[in-house]
Length: 327
Ligand code: UDP
Ligand code: MG
Image 1: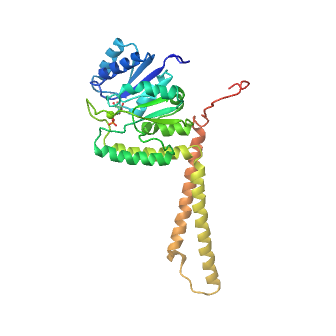
Image 2 (image 1 turned 180 degrees about the vertical axis):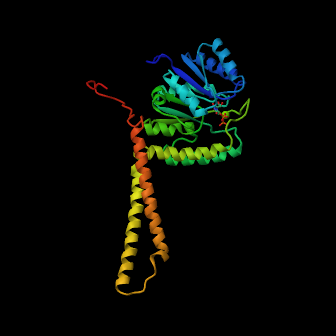
Image 3 (image 1 turned 60 degrees about the vertical axis):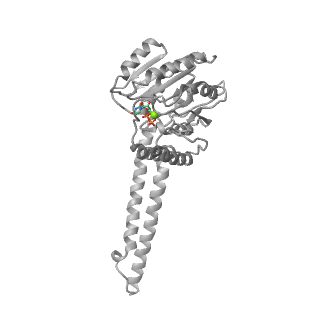
């Protein structure tokens, strides 16, 4: 295979207590790569496993030179593991897959072809036929629907599929933090990688071990979706949201309060009987509106100060430049 990269494919595998699956997975990947004559590396990121995973990784890397291992000091989470794996990955195409043998390495050659030949930035797997309990598949449908709507990526059915392929440039330019592994296509799109595709992939039942995510995945997933939407829309200009809302509420409150005050004065001067301001419910509503408006404005101002100091504030990706530009 020809490319300007030394390695065709990096396979990044985050894992937490998956010692039983690893040997089978790694030999399977090795077989597929050799069959298709790919140069490759497998980066196994042990996310603080407490079983024998690390011993298994060490012995695998002695047997197969392409196998590289990283072990975290404790369990930081799947996103952290992916982030670390992306940091070291060298390949032209970077493929992520789960360690539990639910994703099939046989999909790799086709994913590679989609990135290198068809020009996709990112290809996400779609577990069309799933081997998961219904308690997982129904909420997942809902999430994918909402994510499609919010992100505008309307051609993906399965954002959270562990099996994905990326062009090298994508993984080097996106920042996955917190629990954002569920929304990598959304992050990639907002950074500017818009050619996002999908491939139906085989989903197998978990052979060993158990799932590492419980029901809390849905609550966390939803909160993450909110924050990612918010951060990507207003993260760089918080004042536009808070400032507008705050000013609007304050002005409304002020106008209303002025009206109440003036009408009261008018009544007093003309000897018309009028209720006390403090006995009118609208007075309290308007007061609250002014206070909330000030608070929102302040929140926006503080957020703006933080955004100014953010080291990432001017991280933009340059795609091309003319020959006489030196960046
Ligand atoms: N995983 C991880 N750190 C964690 C939890 C999970 O690296 O804290 C890995 C896990 O070992 C597996 C992948 O993430 O390789 C997906 O996890 P799992 O199969 O439990 O999720 P599910 O398939 O149930 O969505
Ligand atoms: Mg799994």
